[in-house]
Length: 462
Image (cartoon, rainbow, N blue to C red; front, side, top):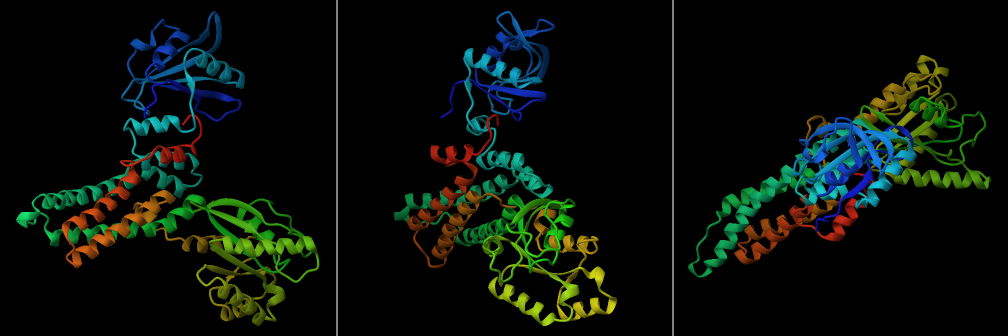
């Protein structure tokens, strides 16, 4: 499957900048680069040691395109496992394109999305789950997603799966051996030890599957819908959380006609806050559409924040409690934070009345920022960070999650077969299926379509 072409692509973001990096990879990468590079010291790139950097100029015939630094990485000690050259040039769009076009004319081919990492996988430099973690690392925009991607790229998840697969494979080999001696009625695989292994594998699989609930929201950001009646301070709260004037704030009810979204990192976790249109009866067609979207966003969110005006509601807390119950009944499994806003207008006895009447209420003033920090801490507490803090393996990839579910299903069949005394040939079928799904995760079992789908999501140059 490994293409023998030498590929080239821009490895840094497109656009003008201080510098740009152009990457070549392939058997002829060093030879092709050498013909277009004139070292200031007269060195030949092909005769230089691996992992060395050289100053010189990229030359097209007699024309000098740019002064550059060329880094040389010789196979197999490179990212792709092939000869790799990285050219650091000035970040002009014109210079970038001139250098790339030059190498295309001299025998290189333009790299496809993720082709450098695909070659790293095909050459055994990374397994498939590590390769996918590269894309997650590039996309990480908060501490938690970065931590998980780094752990997976270093092989934490892969090694855990590989260990389970190896142990299961050893027993599978003994079961298969028994089939060769079926007439002698011998038993090579100790059924008690095998059952203990299956129980251990089941526990690990369930832990990894359960971790996806945390990993998925950390990777994609946790959507939080801010809901409530018009003019209770939802937009002011969004601005306070973001520490900028993101949403329009006005005393006029119904200012927010559409949902406004923005993301921030709190304690290393990404939260995507959604300011929604105020919920009320209205004849305004545009506002009605906004209110309809509010209910859609509540459905999509992981957490709902219900905000009310404490100053105007203190005399009618029963109505507030009724609204809270409506949301709880409609979304019983979804965390709900109840927030009383504008407490800067209340006296101490009124604040105490709120706390005594509504369990777990948060008292804030979005306008002054009072209580906002306590609110962000409460949001963090909703996320199970135990696995993250303990550096445990956390599954973030939907493909891995699906394979783990299928592996668990097959392992459960093996366990049931052991308990019911199922014959070795039938046990072997379920074991092979479990091994297949383990292999899907690390890439020991792949298809061209699977690889195409995975690496198509990478950026070109990586």
